[in-house]
Length: 87
Image (tube, rainbow, N blue to C red; front, side, top):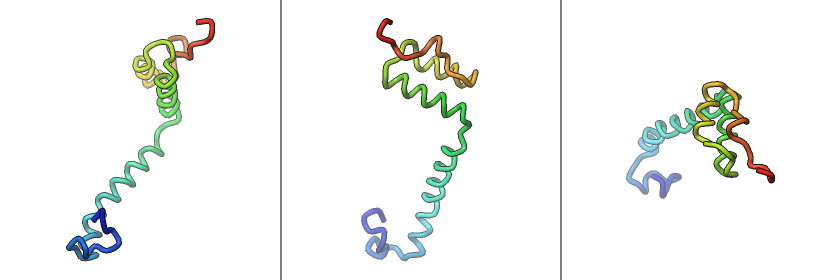
């Protein structure tokens, strides 16, 4: 099906059989897309800050700060922040 999606008969399937097999996969993709769009704003802030913390090697434990952020709905800038030139 992946090799010849436009011609299911090359895979030994009829068009209706192919739709039957693809429907659950499309539904799962749609559900995954919808769940990403429905994150609360504070949760997305926590995720974005965690990603920056990991990528830029901020001071503090990124994971602990992420967990704090999930509970308090704000990033703990006193514990996890960018490392400045003087630090």
